[in-house]
Image 1 (tube, helix red, strand yellow):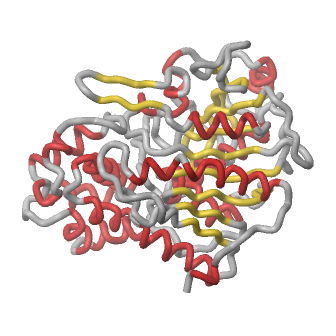
Image 2 (cartoon, one colour):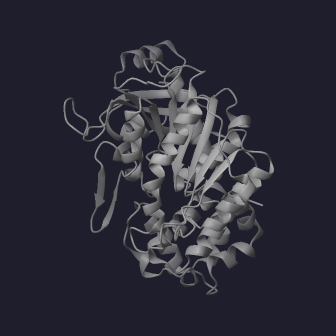
Length: 419
């Protein structure tokens, strides 16, 4: 049942489940308006219980809403709205944080709306991920801010999750905010102050949303964007991490998303990938963010191709692939809102050089940008590397920055240091 009819309005008002189990994630025929709520059901965030210390201080609602895919066609995305149990003590009405999570993987079981109900997802023999974003989300909720968390396009729903797709994940984030301000009982409204927030994959989504909000969702009252540890250029990311076993699945997830979104690239990839490469993409399609498997056993992408070239060389000499990857690059548009970017100069996963170039490009267009390079964080490799470590010290600074933007304080910037 779709939003807009009397039946669905009554359903939303009662807060009754619209579907049971995974049936919730199967979309009906969709209306065309982005941000339209399709269905809702109550959700329970893991560890939340009345009276327990350290609980998530919110009531949760899972919702399916209409968004747009990378070609601007309607698609279904699921997200979770979190209503704080503590008051907002800042100026004006309670604000909304549109939250984009970090990398969880490409399998449907990795969707944040599922992970938030169980924290850890495990598939034998060694595929495991957990909802680490709850740390930041809980901190925002304790400030009295409402939070809506998008699953991104294709996580949980039948579509392939197009990992690190610039437009699709930006749209999913903006449409999550659109849906939240319409949700009956939320106390929000179309004029509610909104801030975009994300780290890692979520940082790329937040950056993309900051670039697109004025043209795609101009009715939203967006006050600023926190862009933490973003991937700026998918092809650069692949080349930068080629040969690193921990990052090899991410390359497979990107290629799976490109093949799903750009049908003209499928025969090219079919011809260019050898049996090993094909098997890696197939296996990675259903994996979460800390898998072990074929990709880790063959981290050099030259092992994936029929010619023995790295994937970046294959991209560069195939115009259809090169065009699809060019569409994923940030920094070609400029936000109309202030931005805080935090990225470690020693980041071993999401490289710093393109982040700095993106910030400089925005500065050149007059955007108030604060770039925190976090140079004091040492280079660390392994499962808990510099990229992961930077997430934690950035929490306090980023959330205070967001609080200040919602309070209407002038945005700081250090564009003077970015030629």
